[in-house]
Image 1: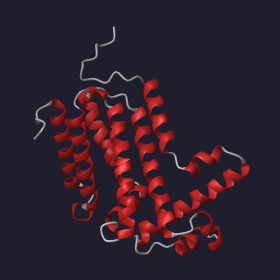
Image 2: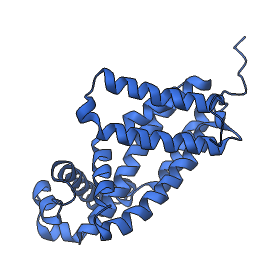
Image 3: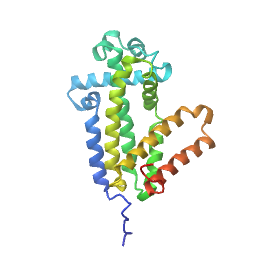
Image 4: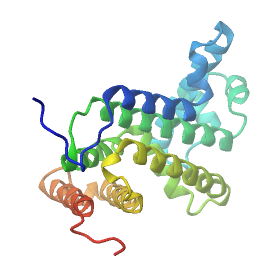
Amino acid sequence: MPPTKTLAEPVTTTDARDVAADAMLSGIQPAAIANLSASWQKRKSAEMQLMLLEAAINCLTAHGYAGLSTQLVAQTAKVSRGTMAHHFPSKMALVAGVVDYTFYRRMERFLDDFRKSRTLGSAAVAEATDMYWKSVQTREYAAYLELAVAARTAPELNEYFQAAAARYDRLWSEEMVKSFPQWKDRWDELQLASDFAMAAHMGLLMSKGPLGDGARLDQVRKLISHVIRLLHSGAIKYPL
């Protein structure tokens, strides 16, 4: 007889996970990705847009937001200025595309890892924390982080980026609620845990220089996971 699940364990089946994840991704899927399965003409246009977005990510990670330009992206992608202007006529149009694309890719990887997970109970909380850390170490997130930092001093970027970041934060929170039913009736605590993980991992990522990739970084990661497990267990009382 299989072991009985405790109330703290998620009851979501693998099939339900797949359905929920697919619904989430379809809701935020950039048009360029959606059109990969469309007609020949739309597919060719989508492939070009994706190539330009990948080139833009390379430019952001190599040169920062200040060094990003449609001309540089066109050169990196080895396409004409006319082709670049057809798909992304301005720097802000390009940035908007990058923000949507990087968030989608990050969520796609996180949900793919989550669907493969079979961990239950409080152990799933620790595993999810590890998945989150994995999701912020990608080149897509590095580009996203570059935009987040630049938005502090670039008014035009800040106006767009803050609205997009708030929208995606809401979507991320909604997905966490669906994915982790072990937090049922404790959604405020789940939001706090998610906010803490986001802030802590972003800070950790930006501190990899002095911390390195060794024991110091590992100890901080373990502390982050430990605090979230304590919050989940009720050892840390909410509200604080």
